[in-house]
Amino acid sequence: MPAYLIVNITVHDRERFEDYRRQAPAVIAKHGGRYLVRGGAMEVMEGEPGLDRIVILEFPSMEAARNFCHSDDYAPLIALRRAASTAHIALVEGVPA
Image (cartoon, rainbow, N blue to C red; front, side, top):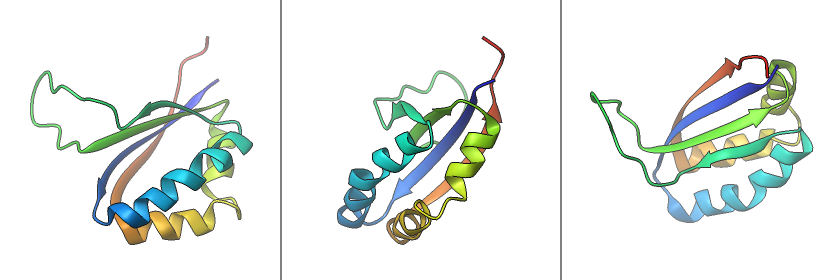
């Protein structure tokens, strides 16, 4: 069953964040993930969602997503992301295909 990593991110240091953006896709793919949404245009349809830059990653399973989040190869990128931005991240289980 797929799992989705949903990220709401506010970038404070664009130059440092660009380093993160260049390096992250390879690590995400290595763990079976793929981008579904990567900071595209957003239109609020109702309420005040408090969203800034949205990223949604799909992984084959909750286990694969957790393995990515806690992997040694992603750890340096976490530090880089945290130095350049503030993020709210949730892991959500999908529905069977």
